[in-house]
Image 1 (tube, rainbow, N blue to C red):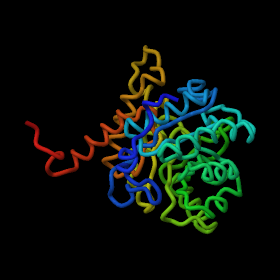
Image 2 (image 1 turned 45 degrees about the vertical axis):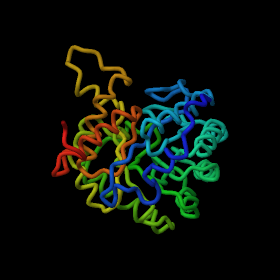
Image 3 (image 1 turned 135 degrees about the vertical axis):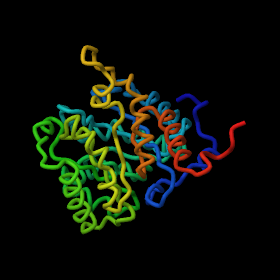
Length: 304
């Protein structure tokens, strides 16, 4: 691990508190969750951070760039992805979670398995980001409820290998809103405190490009549920399709960061609590612009 990337105590102390609840739920700044995939098959950065030292260095670099928390995932959830065994997921994520948490980084664990979540919390994670919203593992809600962790519950219909076969909606915003309402009620009944619960409409999960845009246009109806909301649009193909001309090839995932930053700005202005992104600095800048747009003075200081 590059020693120059270690966080100074003052840097750690100056970070906004992450959990619980997300500050965005009380009118605070939109948070940035940096994505750290320690997988060989993620759609954007698979294989880049498989080595432990590279994963730790990248997590620290994202934190230095302004990430409020780093989301460590050991199982790809891209369309068509095959699940990995639990022991392999644990092998990938636990050393990274432990090292980042020990360095003062707020860590989120991206998992659908209750025992992976529990092990990651013991290793220092403070947030559980479950793309299944507790549906993939019936023990998840109870397990998280026994801790002080914040829980992010995403709208989910099926595992990645089958999810694009489940893209039929009558009204995608109302259908997602109703499903999240049911999950919220079930999770609270299982013991998760409402003040520790964050909702995610699940862009790209069992949804086509138009569904994603419709959900983004209808964020106010998701926010009406009264819980902090997280958005994960980073580098997804629907952004690339929006920017590409009909005759041009789809931009590569790493070429979609400026498109992601635009979504971040609109989401932050709409009142979203957190965005999950690959390029942390671009989204932090977008959040600053969104905050200035909404501030009567137009920013923190008059330009000279």
